[in-house]
Image: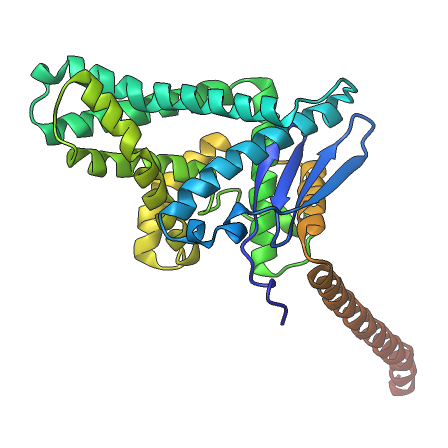
Length: 332
């Protein structure tokens, strides 16, 4: 068995496409206006291979978050160019990094600092530090849900959500070991325990617990302390997501991940078969050549065996059918 056959694939939805990360390479597949699927693969460059300490628990979660943001922004930009057949000059690495940083700062301000500031100015009406952090967490989750709901109503984002659903279904089908064709993949759920949506919800919930230990203070302290412990919050959330993804068959784990799965009903939508074809093409391209060839050979052998059985049954049925009238005629 190949060492990569049990690899946990991941991905993200793009503009009219899907990106998949395999053990050695990342693939991007995009449906172009003429109906063709354009595919690009790039070797994975993991900074954690150069600095092994970045693979340590808690630290690896922060590294993965930053890496995902940078790679994701670059893939979104490329997919938009392909989907719109835009030949204009693409953003440079520095411009993409700046865009990712700005997006990160806006997210921190909206989902972390704004709820903290609201609670600080209303703390006299709330009570003790535990209740303050619970209220802050409720505000944070509410703002996030309203934001997700609002953007999910737009037509352009709706197609991205459908590709998000296609990504989940394709990965679920691959993990189930079925042949990767739309007829099979469409039967799998669009909700997946390792989704980034679940990670964001985990960050907000776990932050409530960690922030309780920060105590009270001035507005500057409250905001600064939230920023200071964010890497810890992200690290703990990542470790729980890894654990829950590997143990999602256990009943008590299913209870814990249920809120994150239900939230995915807002961030995913049922894809059509053309979108499944794109997600399948992306996943296949991200697989090691050896694994993909073994998979294709396995299902080809299955089809050959099923076809030979069908031919034997047809021959047997034909022989029985031609002999029956003779016997009935003799009996008469």
